[in-house]
Image 1 (cartoon, rainbow, N blue to C red):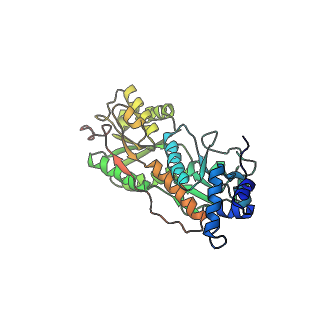
Image 2: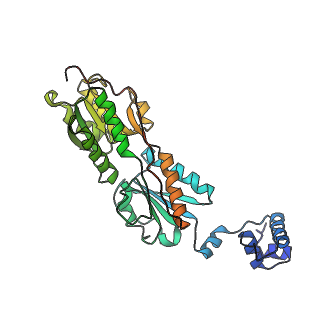
Image 3: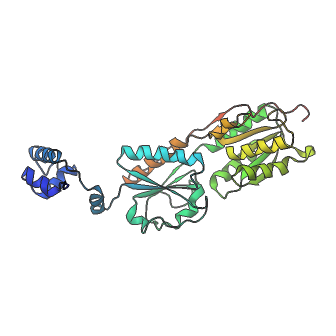
Length: 333
């Protein structure tokens, strides 16, 4: 069966193709009578006509497509960011293309022959900024997630209240009597992790001693780094603050191998509140980050930018979820 065209609709309604385009593009008011518009819509419905949105968008210079650039899909956090962005996009007739940097972080190949022609805008995590260099979309509206609001060419920023999250962690642990801390930091060059380190150091000074170790964002790397940092009982912390739940899981494994009990001998905290946080034993005390809301605000910010509306929004609140991986500092400490 031949698919009906706009010419068929025009013939059935007794109008021109231009009038059909105006009516079905919802631009007829003040240019076409209500009676004519009703005739066109009736003819289109009777024929089962569906406009070619791709061709229409090409003519209008808009694809109604946003690109979401993330470090990787192996991290549940970014899958949830996509879910939130896609939900808001669908409500406004937009699609979201998800593009993970192939190496997790760092440069990536341009997924489009011309990003400027294929996209209306870009939403990107600060952990994937290097991938933006390959997109060839310098003129595209850009919304940055979890990134330095004073730097870069972004038209808008969407940030989490991560400093407040670190405040909640430190107040919780200090309240439990901990005074010797280890920060297991993500070995990733990213604003969000720099902010966590700065906040933790400022909040603990002068109340407690703080050491720092770094590890790649894998359980094995965290286990190895934590094993080294915890090996000497004369200089062993009583609490480990991790940049991520994945790192915290590695610390728990290292503690078990050293014969340390969590939380009796060592308290451990994470950030994200991934599914992993309740899969480990004991379950993890962690700063819960509302990833879907990050995606929702990211897409909302991009829509505002595309509409020429200034974007302003406060940081997205985070909260500490206290579970069994934290407890009072050991009496011997």
